[in-house]
Amino acid sequence: MVQIGYHASHEQFSPAELLDLVRLAEREGFDLAKCSEHFHPWSRRQGQSGYAWSWLGAVLQATSLPLGIITAPGGRHHPASLPRRQPRWGR
Image (cartoon, rainbow, N blue to C red):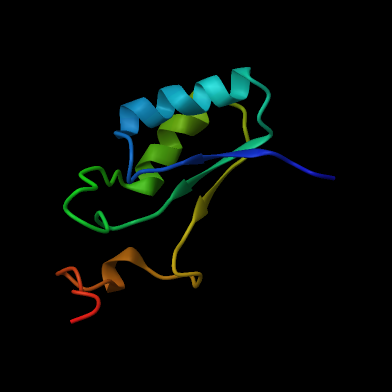
């Protein structure tokens, strides 16, 4: 069965905005929602980086959608294992 989900992108929106967007997605008929899980933004231009796990707690009380996370680059990691400073790709 095909399910259509909403990606709650912590890189693009504040946690409060994302909560409103997931509520809207539920009202509009989306089947599930997933959020990005980043310890910090990928770059300075991406000023948002809500903490996925506490944000998911807020969404769980506000919606009945199944929820999950999306982790890049594809493997599961503990956020604290990321480097403190952003790597400078291509240097």
